[in-house]
Image 1: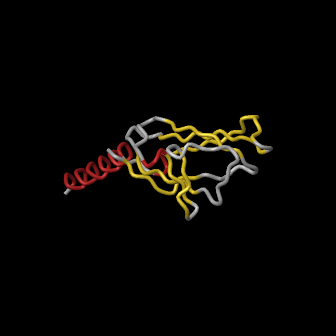
Image 2: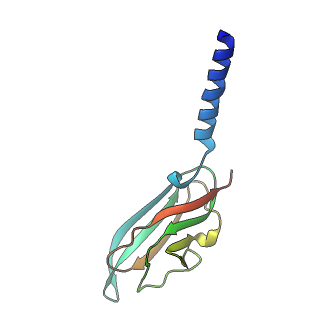
Image 3: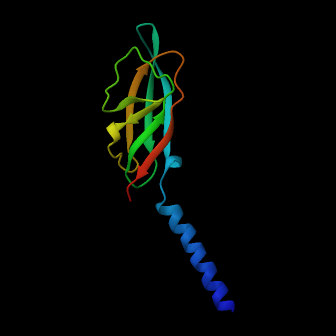
Length: 122
């Protein structure tokens, strides 16, 4: 009986460790926004960095971007409003593990961008 308990505990521990190592998702996406110090058409410019903190590539990243507006054009292959207060990052293409995507926009106040969906590919 003791061997069975130890075996079950070992399997549980390995399952938790494995899931922690290879499980990537929204918690592995970090978004930083900082003011650049430049003004575009009277609006402050904001530099945004989206970081994939996972070792695995992540694709189809969507951020919440309620009423997103900008006076500075943003490359739609990098950041694109989709409607329903959602925005696509990197045109849905994979963001490599530990890689970053950067873009800038100009508006006041800054938008609260947070990840709402992503698919890990590992």
